[in-house]
Length: 395
Image 1 (cartoon, helix red, strand yellow):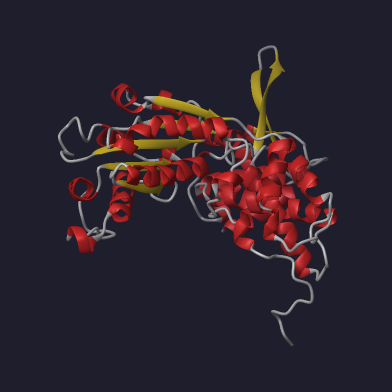
Image 2: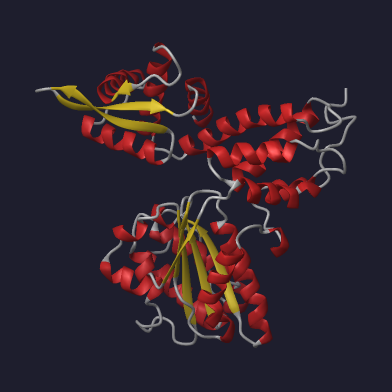
């Protein structure tokens, strides 16, 4: 049996539907103003001058990373016309969450050991030594370095922002200059920063709003050549766009749903992608999205969420409320099951607040009556079965 065979080919170029794909400028829809803002902020770099530092805010899937990568790549090409060399490093702070990891990653990307004779090992050096090597690399190779810190709020130590934004002022860089683009999902991220960092880093701030249904539809159409001609039924793209706009305005998730729909059609040996494929893909995307969110959460946050889902299943209706005390009692039993020490109630309250921020649960404060104070009701936004499946998938 040919396990890889299929009578009907659905995809022509599936890479167009991958999150890692960086599209051409004409495929970036609805972000002309944001691209112009970013270009104006870093424009001095194309002439060899110090660019403005930038903080970019917005929900997941609003094009922050995409636009930052695109505009810095374009800056590299424009700078060549002025005989200026720009180096760009993209650091995912969710993966490189310590100061040392982030500096090591930036140095590794900007380095060419054959040219600089400087090594950037993955471990074994002190943070200060990684910095020293980064400065030497930038000074020897570039007129300007642009460092993108994606999900910058995940960095454990804000000192990297101070070091990068003041590298020239402090004399660490003498032959070149540097600019920082910080990207965060948290609009109030700047409020948590030290005043010294705010003064040196936050020169320009831009907010990316969620995409509307029309914009998402155009984004999907711009990538429809990922499929063979006439494979997509007419209602598929409008259906995906409507689902995405109604729930989150996240273009990344919309692209995932469209890709999943194609995969479902392919797995089912269908000749075309239908709206039924979209509905099945939407369910798959929900599980995939939650699994991604949950997999990035600490183990105790997963246990709290599992307790919420199990309690919701025990009650009538998938949207049944669960009090914080109910969740805490079951959470402690789950900790016993896993032979781990449980956290205090105050910390579990914090975890529930964090889950609300991630849009996994909703919270509402209720009045218990005279002399009894108030309490918090927690509700799952998604089907508890989907939550439990996501928890199991993330283990």
